[in-house]
Image (cartoon, rainbow, N blue to C red; front, side, top):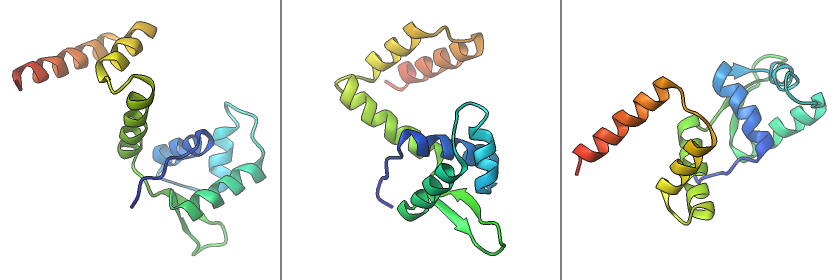
Length: 125
């Protein structure tokens, strides 16, 4: 499957589907309404477009269609992160990490995970 870059609104819908697994338009819409003003018909239309693009699949066996993400969270994150590194950080992953860590304070668990990753990278040399 060729890489399809979801829009910001499509990413919000994918986040709901990744969390829930399967969901109806109404279920997705209810989650979206918790943090933004979204109309039901807008959510429905977006999910129909996402189905046409291949971002989601739709089970039409029952009266209410059930949607599922066709793209994995990890692949989508990797794809968008790669684009961001190339376009905003001139291909430098370390510049992205430095910027990200400078903007927010990581938790103790996150710092531990970062240190572990750095140790693994050092030992791989």
